[in-house]
Length: 395
Image 1 (cartoon, rainbow, N blue to C red):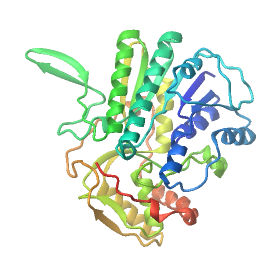
Image 2: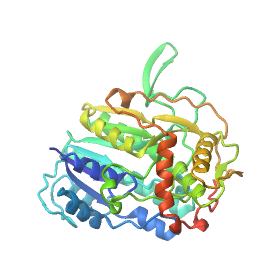
Image 3: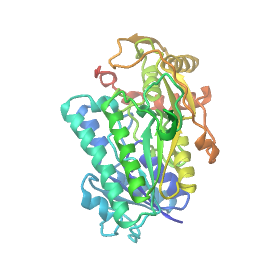
Image 4: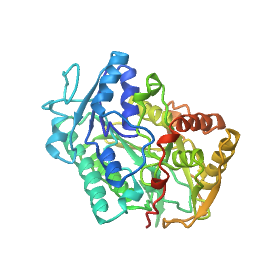
């Protein structure tokens, strides 16, 4: 089975992706510098349960399954480390079998600061977001350009690149006719945070690399992800992914469920009409896998909108309220002053058929799915700290 390299392999999506591919027989190597863990400590953010280190998790995975996930702890903003991943001149922090070809067939790029609130928290974190996200992407495209141009990059983008335009959102590209001439261009983008702006810049860097060097890239414009459990994490609770419930690193559905469990009013920002596309964490894994199985062509920047359904913040709150009350929780919804500069009521109609066409089978946000998340969160109720849920980061 082919070699797959996962950048940002300790994160909310990175670790489940590593187990998913390892379980399917791929040779998996992950790289991370513990940015998210360290940031959670620095900001005193909430984590639902303790998570073993990446090296410890890889050892647990091997003990339970007999399969290995090779681990490298390092900072990918450093060009030499990134380049070593494609030459084979590197050292593992832990691995059973240290054979590595240095030419992965696929690179999954998650290695970025993933939070919009973090990116506008202060000037220091803004600088960290810019330098980390753009340097890692730039280092990646240059390493592949110099050493293995056939490697397929699967990059995690975000639907937030598009903003909330008053027209239908296409999958990455739009045909424009202007003064009698026609052309196809990247869909206009209008980010709502500095983080989302760096993701726009990522797409531009990738598009440059595709045009100049004929690289093959799939850019996945992902919406907010929810969920805790995957088939691989169900093997042992120690394999569960990082789960944040604070406003900086926690996604809205995950946050609302935690708030409901402890009786904290659901923090709906403003009018609550903000509409976004959502997907289950298991669908993130499917989307990456199907993109790997049907790679982009050389010289192609292929863009998919990685969502499965859309909801407003009010609709999410209503589902959490209904399911939570049925389970006996005292759920309340609170419309608070919106700390964000965003449209609270808007048109939102994205296209998202491409991933289904290549084989993704969607999971939907049913009451049963929500109920299963409630039960996991409730089992860690004593760990939840009310004081870290909402601090009111503004922009």
